[in-house]
Image 1 (cartoon, rainbow, N blue to C red):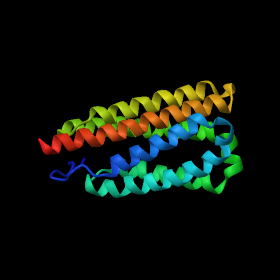
Image 2: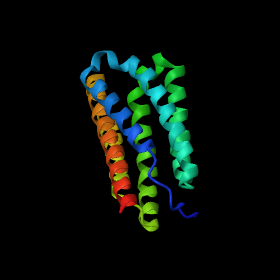
Image 3: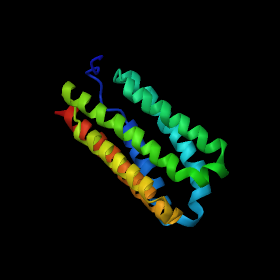
Length: 176
């Protein structure tokens, strides 16, 4: 396993991803009726942008896991955009699988960060939250789109907050 490159400042990517996810999560949470079809398009675009960011960040941190998260995000984004009707119907399952995949990858990456001496708690937290939300969505899909969009909105808001906290924590560590 390659070492994480040192001497790099925490990229603004975490802050940008956090703000975008926070805004999207608030919208999803308060507009559950119109969210399902619109969410497929919005999430598709944002997943592609975030995926591209993770992909680019993977070179800074020499991280195959970040590259994998980026490629998964881009793939999910393209699926969402290219099949809006089908995506709206199956979005809860697709979203849950994304939460699970990214959550597991974040858990692995957190322990890699820990071994390299980087802040790892926020990444671990994001991974655990993703896995928990994935199982909640998969366990209760019968509750309908309103519940699913509420869970999705809550997860996206938490994901955004964790990304922002990770950026702030990383900046403090580098400044010290």
